[in-house]
Amino acid sequence: MKRAILLQIDGITAKKGRIPRDFSLKATSEFNRLWKDRDFCNTFIDFHRKTFAESKKRTGFNVQVYASLERAVWRSKVKSKGITVKFNVPRNCKTFDMAMTFIELGIYPRNRIAVPIKKNRNFQRYSDLLKSGWICKTYGLTSRLGIVAYLSKEETELPLKKNVLGVDVNSKCFAVSVISSEGKVLHQDYFGKDIWQKRKKLFERKSVLQSYADTGSEYANRALKEIKQNEHNFVKNRIGEVVREITEMALQYDADISIEDLRRFSPKGRRFNREVMRIPFLTFKQNLMQRCFDKNIALNIVDAWHTSKFCSNCGAVGKGHDSSNYALFRCKKCGVVVNSDRKASLNIAIKSLLERRDTTNHDSFQISNRRVPVNRHIRPDAVVEPIVAVRHVSSAYGKPTGFSLG
Image (cartoon, rainbow, N blue to C red):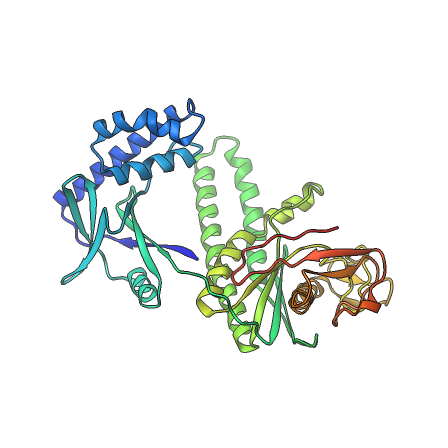
């Protein structure tokens, strides 16, 4: 697991501040110059051999600094207005404590600069992570003279918890279902409804401002940028709060957490794609992975095959949503009518539970294409042909191991 924390420089003088500022400007200029030469090279080794000697002489950077600059150029697809230069510990960077905490950066050979770090909330979080076993082997200097601490910690295998908590991420809310190891529903809830309510109002406001911005209105352009930034900050903060509430519920019920693998969407029309793009799934997943890692909760990724289409009561696969009410699911086999989002979260938890139980003896479990009692353990005589094999797709902190349908 990796994470980055931005630390602020505290009380640096104008003279000392000029040195890292000039270094950052020079690094950005060199980055853009190297970016032009990259297009004529087929491999990174060719690029390194072509540019290293001349650029090292021109910039005078430390070898490690220049090597990190080359790797950043090779990975980048566009030029940059400001880059973060990385320094490795202990070769080119080190920390020491006096009255304050300092980070010493080797920007040029035999030329190091010590920058004091401000002891704010981010610094306290950084210190707490170091005490809890996290390791920082790389620091970065941003174009705005901030220090980025890149921390890492080894993942460990976690024991299975008693229950499973399934989370369904949709265009309106986060639906949550907790089930026991026997398949009994312990709790169901919704989170984040206010996110989509506020975003809907912002979408309407942005639509009006965009019409004025297209006519060249400067006020509309400024207001549009401000609304977009406010929306971004609101969604980011609320996602963090929702993730905290979900993990606290998982600890309360002694449950592992399961979510769908939503990395790819098939094209299903303009309206569907517009709704999908409103789902902040990547932000939610990244926050959830970090929170689960800190709280020692296993995060399982299950495949998204028909989680909204099969009935959690009898196992029949249908068309999904009710024709008269999109928010409801109506099973044509057993006649059960349930909320679609709540049922989807329950199906995710059931899939994770079946994977957990079956993979103790087999590499895959089976779901009937028409009818299987998916709310309890699968028995050999309960499977009806044709069948679909779903490979186990879980890991301790959310790294998919792959799945197959066949």
